[in-house]
Amino acid sequence: MFKKLLVLGIGAVALTGCNSTDLELYNLMNEATEFDAYEFINKGSIEIIAGQDSASIGFEQTGYASQIDVLNSESTSIISIDYSNMLTSGIKQTQAEIDQAIEDGDMQTVEYLGHLMETFEEMQQLFEDMAETPLIMTQYIIDNVCYISTDYLTQMAKLTGEEFDMELADYIDYGDIFEGLSLEVVEELLNDFENTYSDLLATLLDVSAEGLTTKENDIFTVNLGTEEIVTICANLMDNVIYNLDMFNDMFALGVDNSEIIALQAEYNELKPQFVEMAKLFLNANLTLQYYNIDGVHYQYFDMYVGMNPLFNAGEVMGMQMTMTTEVFETQYRDLTLNGTVMSID
Image (cartoon, rainbow, N blue to C red; front, side, top):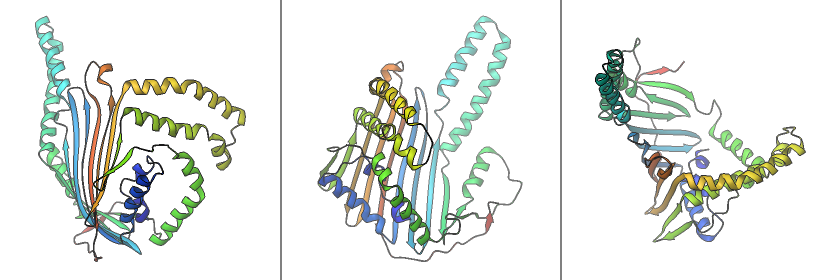
């Protein structure tokens, strides 16, 4: 199953066309899915920006995995959470209101806002402590059973001053991720799904994006701007709306054909307006780079989605996500879980 689910940059495959560069990229990505045992390094961050306020999460994960008969893996994740700038505008606004209430002699409002400011300051201190204390988590999958360390729980409890009313084990057993099925059976089910719905998936993901994939010095790059992203999303929506009759027949939805025709007609009328509005209000870009050096597969992913500042009083409002991945084949090794275990039940 992992051979199919861990295609690096799988989302980019749906954005590529069928020229030689696209096929070369697709084949290179698939090489990593054939590794029986491999090591990986993931690093990334997600930042949400809302004017003066922002919040970010950074993560780094290193580990090993194998997929011979059963799924086994071990990884260590370091997660940094920075909410220290999330209350910036709230604190400034509250302080301005306090100053105005003092000037107006409104002591009742001053008292109320004073309590609110204390809450903000307590939260701000907690956020600053969290930003300075990365959370560490260790995860094992042994014979398809997932175990996650309790380190991060004790770290969070220490930051918030809370105490557990029970003694924690070293790891929590989250059970069989395949609910008792063997890896072979799971792969067979996945193959059956692909065979059953291959035509449907091909229709839904039939997006013309030729020319967006380039290759230079053995580095494949996909670049999308606002215009391309809106066009691709519109094409995906077309694939859904214009194939509603196929969905209706395949899943026996029982929708009358006249209703489908009416919906499609309404969609045709409104689509041009929505597309132009999206291009006007949206500010988005996506970059994917993929290459292989000495057997190591590298991927860089960078995406921003937000509102055009021109329509938000000049303030930035959006989300930035970046991620780098390295994967390389290695020798199989047995994994052993050392430590006490408690069930999630």
